[in-house]
Length: 172
Image (spheres, rainbow, N blue to C red):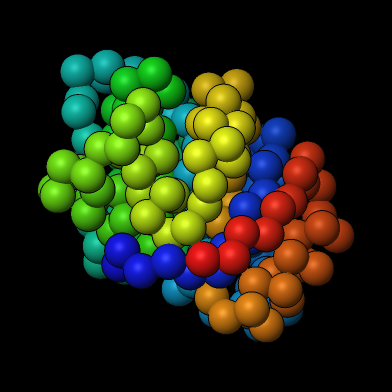
């Protein structure tokens, strides 16, 4: 999954806003297999390094368990990672495979985390990655939709009508 793609990334203040945006995309007919979400986790067990599952069902326990659990039914794949400099994050969708690919191939690009390397591998520029990582550190949620120009434009229009703080399109 290292090929560059067209993407639209939205930043949300709360998990409730991000979840509503996912539901709006689903209602609008957007392919849920082309949607990823990532946010900070407040898992009490700090010694956990991470897990990932590229299947379509996972149970998740934690402070935001109901939120993540509801999204796992819509998104393909899920993961919990501890990313130095950001902390514990939970991700769902194709982003999981991109992060795992970055970790497994040791493709760490100067100064970028595994998440940053994954985003960079799909064509998101460094300055945007740094902004997205800063948003995650501030307990925001990222929603990433990818696909053809038409699919990304459809997602952008839908996401701009939600409670996103910011929405940006990146062409691979």
